[in-house]
Length: 244
Figure 1 (cartoon, rainbow, N blue to C red):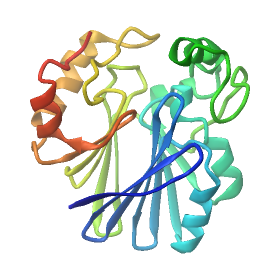
Figure 2: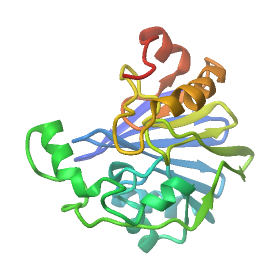
Figure 3: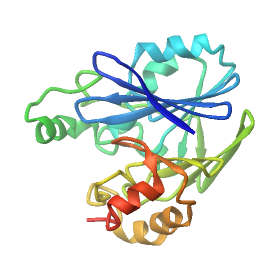
């Protein structure tokens, strides 16, 4: 496995991760530090938690991707803001859990209605990152799963598992159980927030925590915010991360 910083864009940071034929690019929205992941295996591609970035479409065409899926770790606006953009630009399907899909069309449920307040709290001003005014943002899913969604990705296996915790629509996405996209249920050096609407400490303790602790500590965690790290590194540096 190999991590290396590749470049800096005006508003996004790109990180490349390679393992066998798997290539993962990380794009970070720099005001609130939300991560989008673009993953390739041969002619297959997935986008996890899309944010708008023109370079992504160029890379997808460069890789000559034949099958493209968009996966969502949860329904919050900073993790779905690029859905409509990529749906217009590329032939793709959007995949998420049932609770996530239920919230996507509604600005109150996907929290875009309150994003100005989030930005005020985060950077001290009312500007909105990425898509301009977020108060009316809505989108929809094409493929909806209740508990789990599994599919072949080149020579790899991907499992998306509905787990709740941070929000009712939260899922964890695993590639061969070695690359784990945790959304906002596991962020390095941060306690998991379960106090937003539909968040549940009980569900976090019953579902999220056991799944995380069952993972091999050498697996790489790709969080919704922050820098990807091994699970061992995250837990050794912040062993009490489990919840506020």
